[in-house]
Image 1 (cartoon, rainbow over the protein chains, first blue to last red):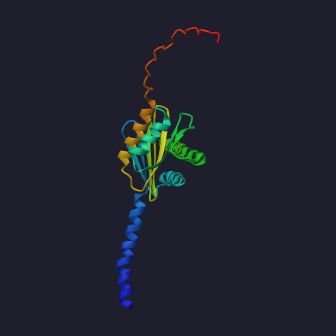
Image 2 (image 1 turned 135 degrees about the vertical axis):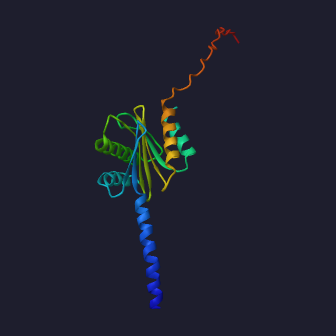
Image 3 (image 1 turned 60 degrees about the vertical axis):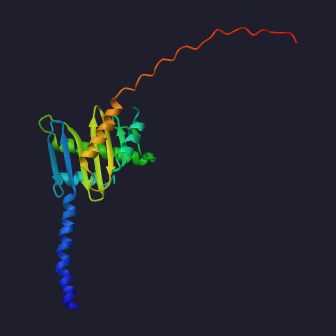
Length: 59
Length: 136
């Protein structure tokens, strides 16, 4: 029983951690300009956090 | 095309768009897919806040911000502006960004198009014939 629990933790833990990180990485802001350029702000950057917080309020 | 019709077309074409609001150059709500005026105003406020914050932080080289996407786990918020008008839309999670922007721009452009001129009606006036009065 204990072995099974350890095995579950060893397999499930990293999967859970990686899926969470993947989901967090999906949160980002894309800014498009009239000259055709684009700026991407990843979650964690202070500018992105501010914009994501505003957007979260609308969803 | 009027704004309400343009938004109706947008929601019919794009299944990913959940709600959309059109704003004029002063930031006032022109039309909305939402029945609740309060929610429309909040969504409009979000668009103005997003554009304002992005403009403030990233103004450089005279280039102007035309589109913005804030992608979150629960969905995305899109803002596009053109010709003084802006449109803000919320979508389901992981939308096809290019397609949503295309639909939003198409919606804005359809608003800029002039209404097709109605053909003038021909005058159907006929001379009124005097009613003959008869003594019964």
